[in-house]
Image 1 (cartoon, rainbow, N blue to C red):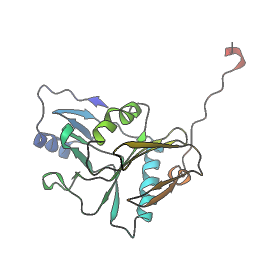
Image 2 (image 1 turned 180 degrees about the horizontal axis):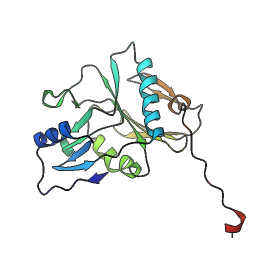
Image 3 (image 1 turned 45 degrees about the vertical axis):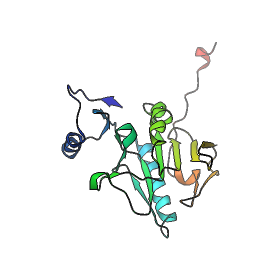
Length: 202
């Protein structure tokens, strides 16, 4: 995420006007805007897989899954951001009646990249935890099979479960989802690590 140079801080209305004209997406944080880089092929495949299998499993429920284009507004952080995937249960709540900006996601998933993984695990998760409706946060590695699943416990603490085998399954309740890593990583080609030659080995 790279900050776009601006001499003055933007209002929410100025930010929305910019987004409507811009060919690239931006994150807004307390008057400052940041460029959001495009994703790799693996990044987009994982989003597609998550959305496809989640849509199918939620077909008979009151929950819906959305990918990439909807913004989430976190009022306490004054942050507008674009999750890779989000799930809403029941009627969506919108920021000032804007149908492109959501207030009540129940589940958010992010596909990790080298440039965003620290932010997604750290400060961004801190911001997401301030969303009253959020119950599930999922981080998906695009370079190897690895998923970090955080769920909000009844005691108000977030509990982490990690999965690294393609046969592993994420059991999620409210919304009721059962996702395997094999589904999330369908058609993903992982890069092989280069082996050191004997000449380079000490």
